[in-house]
Image (cartoon, rainbow, N blue to C red; front, side, top):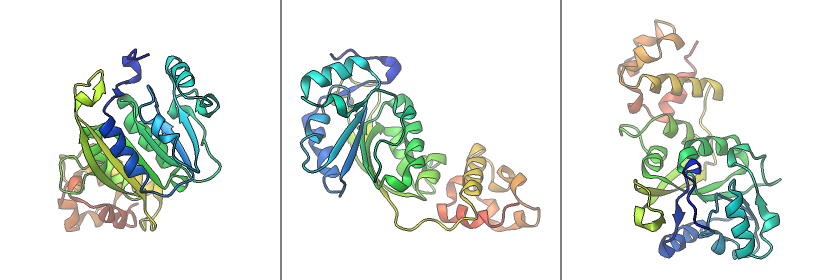
Length: 250
């Protein structure tokens, strides 16, 4: 069963204490629908299917793992979506929570896919490569603060929950992992348009070593670029700073 497919970024969680911690954080939240991403060997699944009063689904690409899950958990077959998470349609008609030991090779793409469904996903609890988890939760002025941080945080409050060592997995990855929680914000940023905000953030961080003035010169009139804020680098701007600047863009 535990055949690791490197191409799918598979590392199977085996540490029961970690499983319990992740599920405990999830159960602090209120939800009626739950999607597990990448159940693999079922370490989380065996706990999630016992949560009372919820509609549970899982998305898994690996046919071998699906066959194992069907044998291990009676009746789960109809709850499994046999696709890559990146290729599925929205799995529920109403709001749903997302949880998973996310495949590390597509973890950033998974977060951006969740952003497409942000109006229907109030909470996400996920395990990532620690570097990705830290980037998602990073604050301005931190070297790990970047595009991922500034694009997720207008919509979600992100909390880094705890580290997970390589020894918690089979086979152990070569990197540390981290679990984060994303909770949908009640109020959105005031921006000119979402498209303008995304363009500004991506352009600013594309040349993050340059001052903002040099990095985003093409997006503003020369007289706007004289403002002192353009002396800063992208990593020193909060999401509110970026939002305010969208109203001054061309």
